[in-house]
Length: 112
Length: 116
Image 1 (cartoon, rainbow over the protein chains, first blue to last red):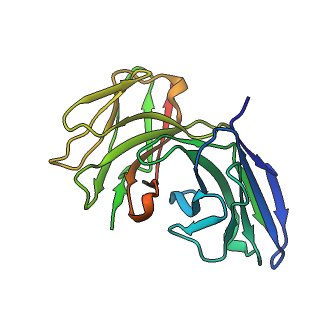
Image 2 (spheres, one colour):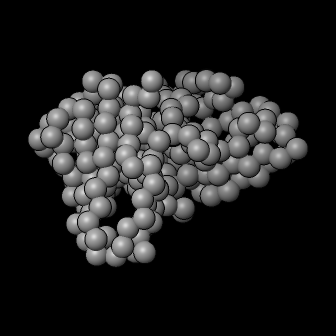
């Protein structure tokens, strides 16, 4: 059974609309992350969290918000989606410093 | 700041030839922890191997890498490429920043394509 799941798996959004991507993990991990994947840029960290009800900015947080209502759930919110946010988004969880990160299946977001 | 460099964006090989994917890094921390993640098409990225021990060879699933702190390198190698090795490979550096966070800094990735 998959330990990190994401929903939706694919989404088409309109420019200026609100988008929420959800992530759920059953690894009992404290740390959760949101990355975006773009050709030529690899995986870039958007937001992360190491405890429920707290989030931290990653390397490219502009235009994104995050929410961690519980240990298991971590959401990424695009309040005003833009064309430049078209990408594949991955959620991951880990047990702590230097620990392996376990990734979800990804969400392909297309903003038109 | 800390960074990871993967010079080759695309590597194309014929089956049976050796694989070498380059990874160099920069960090202010002496206790660098390096990872290789592999991302097969239509799957999730997953850990291939990791190391924090200087000059020690780490192996997994036919691949190996040795962390060389003197040259800040962690190149991924395999003696003989297989068609099934075709994937996107990421080198990553673990950053233990303030607050106890466990961030990874990924390189841009190297797409390996193996043909017959």
